[in-house]
Length: 247
Ligand code: UDP
Image (spheres, rainbow, N blue to C red):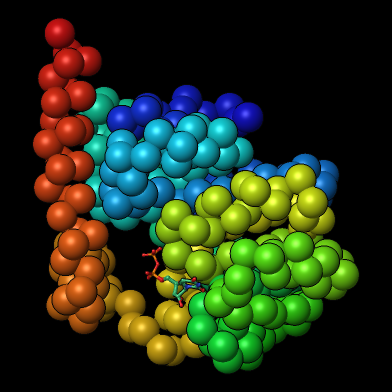
């Protein structure tokens, strides 16, 4: 795995890499062509693992789980670990695109509504000159189409696959087809293609700094309230775990 002490956040093994460390570790895996499934875990994802043992197992078997979201960073620190910073899926996406622009990695964008991955690819070429986006595929498909999607991805020769199907769908898909996929690096990215394509806005910087991105997303998409009820439950569960670890 990796050299960093891995945190145990409610049974989920999260590595407290900084963004720079995460990119360096992942690009080394790409150079060595080692299959690597990455989850950027926010509080909602960690709570999904508490409710679904199969998803918890998947998170435990992923090659790297990164601390996405203010909630995960807070939890790690509360549990006594040193966490340098949040490594959000969207920022990781941008960093890898820029790296790929400099080093010639081949990227496939899989996910989001029809047309979005293509718009995201066009934006990617603006922010990461020289980046090779070798293929795109929208994220709406029937299960029986999965095998041909895998073939489409493999035929492009991509070595980095970004899957933006939302959690937990993207994690299950990447795991289930993991042994057939050729891109070494596979990362689930939630709504990141929508953000890069300009369809969904990211919270303003001050809100991100004040750990209020969740509030911004809730105000923009009130239908997320059901999912967000996981957040107070997460705080309670982490507090309980931190008391238990002190006993
Ligand atoms: N999506 C998809 N296929 C599906 C369901 C969703 O490609 O079957 C896409 C959706 O269009 C959106 C992303 O997955 O771009 C989910 O975004 P969200 O912000 O909800 O991600 P999450 O918070 O779940 O990581």
